[in-house]
Amino acid sequence: MNSVATLRKTITASPLLAAVAYAGLVFALLFTVIISIANFFGQRAEVASSAAMLEQLEGRRPAAARGQPSDVSMPAGSAFLEGATVTIAGRLLSSASRARLRNSAEMSCRLRSN
Image (cartoon, rainbow, N blue to C red):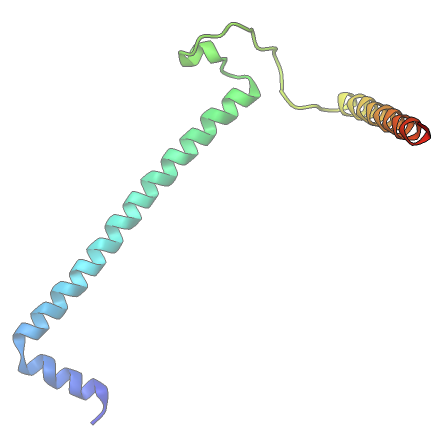
């Protein structure tokens, strides 16, 4: 006999074993449903939190509106660099880094000569 026939014979011969197997399957399915629902609500909370953070970063909602004291006023607009501002900021950053490299090279030369 194959294993399926043996299992069928065992379950049909013992109603207690069949009831325990059925209860186990029902419990496993209910557990899966409950875990899925909990995961759904967890993801929903994460999405709401991310949306609130995005609104704050985009400047739609200042800190005072959320109930937090705000000593400094937030500037209007996006907090990220856009358009021509990116080019200017990049130019300033690269010139500042070049100046620092030049100064550090000069300092290392002075230290070696002393």
